[in-house]
Image (tube, rainbow, N blue to C red):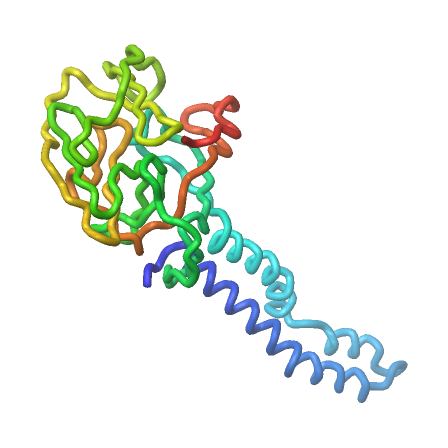
Length: 266
């Protein structure tokens, strides 16, 4: 069990819900008995004091519905994340706030992260958020390159999937934020395609071949020469997947970038 925000949100939901139930079953009936047993005229002020809800009950009843809705939305439908690094440039900028579809690859129990219903599987080209295999307390975001059983090779900055080089075309020098002296390419892992970066002056130290085991996925950053990914620490277990990124809902780093709002992630 990971002690992250979802865990503490779950604890808050359980606590406020229990307080509310205890009030309904035990405390409220006792307050009503006090009210009924007290004279309406002689102890009118006292009735108001004794019949009032404790502060903890009042706050629990106010916060429980809100916390429950947030917990269900984050756990089963959509969860927000912020991009902290440039490993996914040019697709995602540092400071992008993204939305992640939590049921794209099946419905999982929040906190326990155990799948209870199969709804789909990751495809090549998907951008996924997952728990870092070496430290599950950290969330990473990368692009799916290899599926279970795939043969992945990366030599001289050329990506091969099942012994075939992935189609790519040179676009030009990258002029966006977060990275200098980079060349931008279009790459086609699926029908949609996406952009990626290479640093011509940086030597390629991440070369090799990999067979993706069953139940795992090989992932890489779009900023290929500036990404800590499966080339370093291996494939991602399916159980670590949190969902599929699908939209940028806000951007803020040093300043607001309103043009990023509503961008569909591909």
